Length: 67
Image (cartoon, rainbow, N blue to C red; front, top):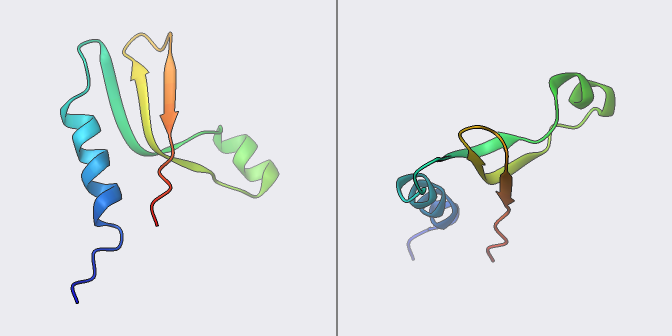
């Protein structure tokens, strides 16, 4: 049996980057908090995909639940 764990999430991240609409940029495993807040909380949350307008006026984050 071929182990595919983790490959679907990476594929989806790559496709979101490839297909991002004009005026949007896409980041994988993006930080949600400032470094100072991460240090204060002792936690460094990351989001699977962050879509953000190039002018930073809007942000959408996507978290995959793959089982």
